[in-house]
Image (tube, rainbow, N blue to C red; front, side, top):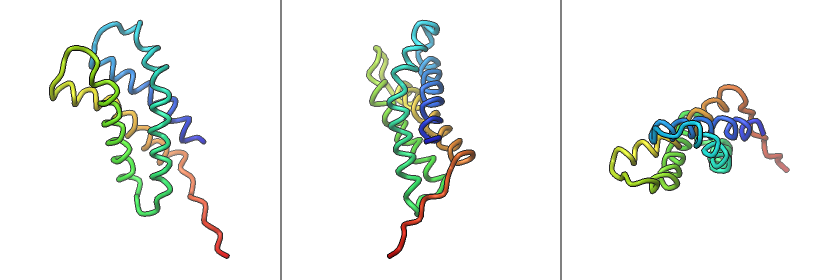
Length: 123
């Protein structure tokens, strides 16, 4: 449960801030909406992290990279079509909106709240 709290608290905050840096206008009028609309995607990325946590073959670093990649793709699909600009720079900047919070949140869950997976009882 702590994993989802970290993703819900940090994901929208870091994602909204990164989105703010890419658009660079209307700071005080869009940040609260970015946070509000970022909670559900952040929890979805947290669920991806939780699923990958229970796969025994995937270690912490590959899990962080996979979560960051999923966040990159999700953010690009969600935010990439906003505005008039398109191109490689916008693709990367909007992708970083998902990559950075996903990777940082996954690292924090590994560092501070990662519990051991429950063993399957044998019969």
